[in-house]
Length: 178
Image 1 (cartoon, rainbow, N blue to C red):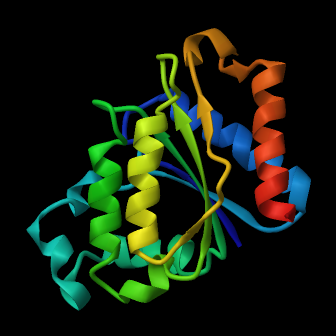
Image 2: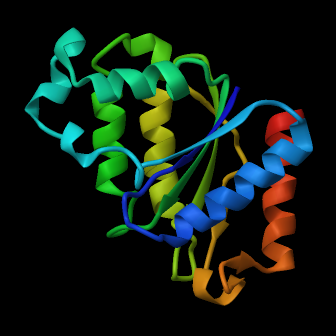
């Protein structure tokens, strides 16, 4: 299974819109089972001190691990730029997952990273921070990272322009078929 992870809990985010395109394109490219997990959709009540308690962690986190994280062989992680890095909720989510069955979450899996930003750099700094984090967790990160810059200029009425779609498709082909 391939997991598309939209790494922000901001409602109606551009990151989610790009993730939905990535979901569609991944299904078309591979024909495999693909799931989208958006941090916008997870219950925010899971983020409290018990999320770090291993087997006593909230059942919602365990359910997410069982349905999305453990079965994923490959992940495409999208993250917006927040304060020169990636979203704090994504870090907290990764931290919560890493408490239970540490190695089964990310170790040995493959990941591709896409940054989304209203600025010119497409969250390159955040993608590098995230790369370091996933390397620490034992995940293999695809060397070609895709910064989607000036998102308001490349998206009209919730749809990405053709050059951005082509860039995403090229990244996905290299990551998924390479």
